[in-house]
Length: 388
Ligand code: HEC
Ligand SMILES: [Cu+2]
View (spheres, protein in one colour):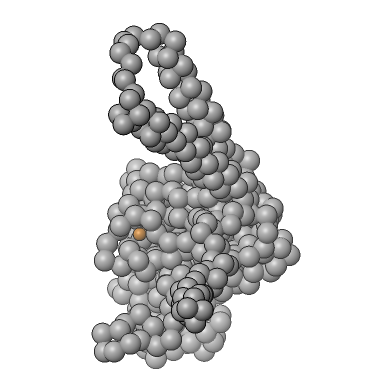
């Protein structure tokens, strides 16, 4: 008998053992790190407890009535209609409960939408299937001609951890599918405004710990904001089903100290590909001639495109060819070795300088002041190569 009891106890203990392992398994949403996400967190639990209380009271009353006034006890159903007191009570109580929940919820929504007076503004553009970040204002004084930091952020999880078609994949990283090549870095305790849009379909910029889940809609700019209070790495994902790679466009936000942020910012800017600051074509008069009085140049209208690349042939074709392919106005013709030989003696740097500053009948930069120096130099190199 005793042994049976012992065995039963042992069996029960064995059954319950896994439950103790669950002791440190918390069921909760991720810990909030901004004022808005803390409000959302409080609402989440507060309203849940209101629901629990209502559930207990309503079902308690119901089960108690069913049990207490059951037929076998000889209960007789009361017959009454239109009891004004009861009707008033059961209208007022839910009304008070609803107002009590709507008030804090509305305040949170208003708070969420107030992206004013931000220290930093970042434009977030969604693409199938990655994110682009542009630091429109990065919180630091910007020098003339200094362009905004801008980069793409894509999934960094190695492919062999994802692809399991030929057997089980490699061991997964800790943040498998939630890691990116370049994360958004922001300083702590600074108000960061996000201007969220999309380039193709609707996406959603969703980082739970920041309390943000905002649509990115093509043609619209939606804003959101956060002020992170503790340094750390916060992860999220696209929250709108946006196509076949929807699950592979995670978001990583890194909050750092101001000093670390500034260091990151200058390092990242230094790594950016160099692009000419202005891409505005020169002002032209009605006749199409450049307003500066320089000879008409066929390249003026396309100078904008040229500024992007220091590609010698493109610049030559669009700007320099008009004179240099025919020898117009005494321009040395490309390929005319006799015309170039004496000029080449000056050395390439002198020819670069002549093309940039102008020389005799040759207008500075062929009459297109917006063409960057590098593009002009590349065009000179291209011309020289064909004339040696
Ligand atoms: C409006 C006509 C015109 C255009 C457009 C033009 N050039 Fe010239 N270029 C000339 C003339 C004319 C000369 C000869 C100037 C001289 O030797 O006095 C010249 C000379 C040069 C020389 C030789 C300079 C020297 O020191 O001997 C270089 C190099 C040159 N051009 C490069 C360019 C490049 C690069 C472009 C395009 C960005 C360009 N040119 C566009 C007319 C033009
Ligand atoms: Cu998406």
